[in-house]
Image (cartoon, rainbow, N blue to C red; front, side):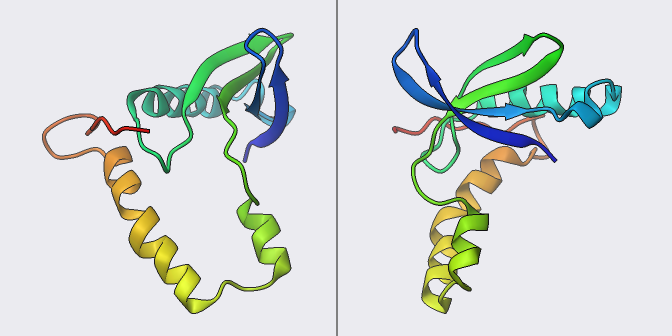
Length: 119
């Protein structure tokens, strides 16, 4: 699990998301390695349904990713409102999940399949 916060990048004048490794895992080598693999994978992808990564940082022993802030409700917030309608769930499952999942899944021929996409 990661903690995600909304932040403001004062140098570039934009809101961003910070995905932080929780203190519980701050010294867990396996979790930190997984976190860095995630950062490299995100950096290799470009798709409108995958948040762009801006940076991988460490400050006072805390590691975090600086990501594109995607507007809208989180899945948790959306589910608090109530279950998704069938048509809404199908739209997400059919129109938004398959291509980004394919991009993020290693193919048989290369370590990471990667396609460029206009944003």
